[in-house]
Length: 533
Image (cartoon, rainbow, N blue to C red; front, side, top):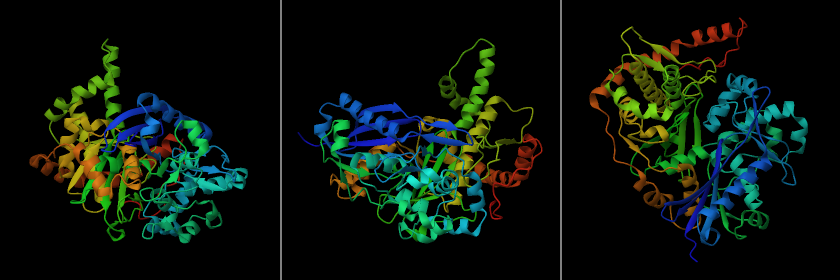
């Protein structure tokens, strides 16, 4: 029987999925199970490592009930997962303790101190990635100080995808997309002793596994894993990149012919651009964003991420739902969202300014401030609910522009993915705010597809990633939506006010935070004087 299928595993924060694709990138089957983590005292978020592997293995077994002859038809398995966090194993390959996932913020004070130091700037200049509490480096520092018994048992420090890869193959490995942004130098794509020293972890270098390129090297499915998932021993397994890079790859971030970007419009917002060399990476004075190795030789994905994207829309929609329910009208969030497009587009553009910092965790891109809060400017008595909603959509568009500008020049075209990408109003406003054409990806599971694409190249289905993209990605991109010229001019004039208002706001945010805390001054989340560009 022909080995004509590839499986991508995508272990997200809320769901673990295994998805089968044909060699041409057509999705033929999905199996999913909820992921589980535990919130613990002191801003912690932990995950049971053994249970996570059992859940991932279960999705592979379940997929075999959806796709006939799956085990005999599968040519390779690839894995990607939620990024950052710390997954420690001992010398025997057993968990040294519960995993700290990316939502764990217990290293916040360590991170703030590092960000405000010269060491923090050196880390950023080496890795190209700004320090945040979710990263393995600060989390290891917290574990050293607070969980010495766990650290005494630890022999290897994994990210989640590395842990699943280890359980599939028995090989301790990392990939460059996470290894370098955590502990390396993006110019060399290798671990950097200077980065480890600046993090205060020079004596922990032995925890870091070798880095492998999953598009060039695979390892074999172990006998133990084969028994557990019901596949044949020896099947090639590829270690994919971090989920955000895999999603960018599957959704069309890379185009060999033009400088493209990719925006993921989800609960959070992520904005990526391709840098075609280390010299093309743009580091900003605020030390924010990430630089991640991309699975095309010599290229990088630079990204800035808003803490909240469609969460802003959900907030205002839910306010309306609450009022309607009080009057006997029960409408779902989806029903209201689908009804918004025409009303939002009919409202006058640019009469209210909105900053979409609705998350209680503040903002992380293109600046970092845990006290940042959403704000409207320019309200008058004539403004309606739909004017407010239009301002929210425009705030998302201007926030995307803010992020792209922090990474250098805006791409000539942006590909968008995520549930809200279906909204005509959001696409129209985003295209005009960025001033570039948009193309919407129809790929439903871009992260798993991106991982599977890495395996497709590694196993010889395609001789290069460029050719794989031609087959897997290009057909999924819709026609380019050009920005409306008049609307683009309006947002061009509005954008300086958007930036000026958010730069002036931190004293207000900090004072409000102090007042809410009962008058106890809050330590500045950005002691670095270069924090506000």
